[in-house]
Every structure is written in C-alpha cells, then in structure tokens.
Length: 98
Image (cartoon, rainbow, N blue to C red; front, side, top):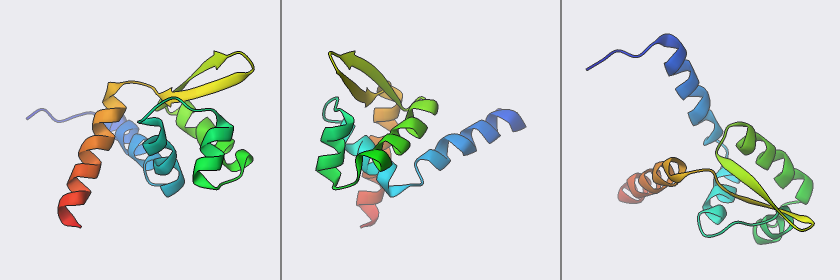
C-alpha cells in the first residue's frame, strides 16, 4: 500500500477534527435530509442562531457544506456525496458498537 505524504495526512487530520464537535454533527445530520436555513437549523436543534452560524462558517470553510441563496434566505446543504458517505459509514460503524 502506498504511503501518503505528511502534508496529505495532516490535511486529513484537520478534516476529521471538524467531525469532532457534536453540534457540527447534529447540523450535518439535519442537512442529510434537506437544505435548511440558519433559522430552521436553530429551531430544530434548540441552539441560538449565532452559535449555528458560527458552526456553519466552520463547516463551509472546510467544504463540508455549501450555500445557495433563495430570495432573502441562504440555504445550507451537504457539499457533496463524499460527505454523505463519510457520515453514513461513521453512523453505521457506531451503531454496530452501541
């Protein structure tokens, strides 16, 4: 098996750190179902809009979520199928243990 570069593995480490926060995971779990705006996410999770906005910014900067402007609202959604697969397999793995 090929050994990966130190830089690539560092990037992977940083990528997985984003999944280390329960609030970010709850947001991603909601977005697996459909695109949502900050207000909808805030109401669903019972967390302030400012806290949700902060977490969405981190998710967006890490390319886990993308945005789409719909009138006055900005909708957030999972950026691509890779993220959906990572979440799916992670949840399946944890479900086997619980």
